[in-house]
Image (cartoon, rainbow, N blue to C red):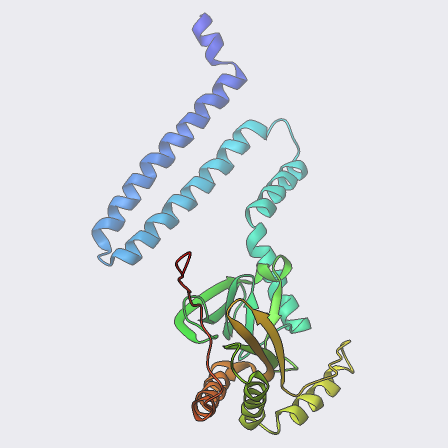
Length: 289
């Protein structure tokens, strides 16, 4: 009699029903997955279907257990509120991704074809979808913003948490620097002029084009550059005179422009007997000699 009274307890009955639900869900998952293994030969499709079966049955079992325990204690409105809160937490990332997608449509911080950096990932935007922005990666182990060939999918939710750098939107020019060191014995002033001439030779019309772009952007943003033409800065380092060329170039032509300038500098330095490249050296001496 005591056992029957114990089993008639509401909490015990709910516990037994919950265990029965878990058991049925487990058996049902095994049976369906066994059928899936026999009927689907493609490994990738089989894996996807098996995961979907597990997720669906697990969610249904959890909902059933919740209903068993709370259907007599809370109203339907409260139950829906709890379920809504649970769904909000579970779907936080997808909802944020959709919000990011809407912001992309409205504000347009970047568009397909733009070269951007999202957090630590750099690349050319090749597709924008509801949940992800797809980039063709540049940089990483490849130098000078060259393509790696990898396709990277960045969640649109990153637009709220990461810094977004756009290389090409509105103003497609960037500043690039080339550091060259000549020996202390070299005619560093002549070397400086050769480097400056090489940069000017690279693109004579870039300064005017950049000024026009800056003029357009200054109507929208607080942007002001006083000097757009190439400049060479001098510095004394441990093993020579460091000459740093700073010049403006197209964001997509950084490597090609650097290659052209370096080729000109190499040829011109080779013509000058009093200009030599410097590099770290060691001097050995014996005490007393």
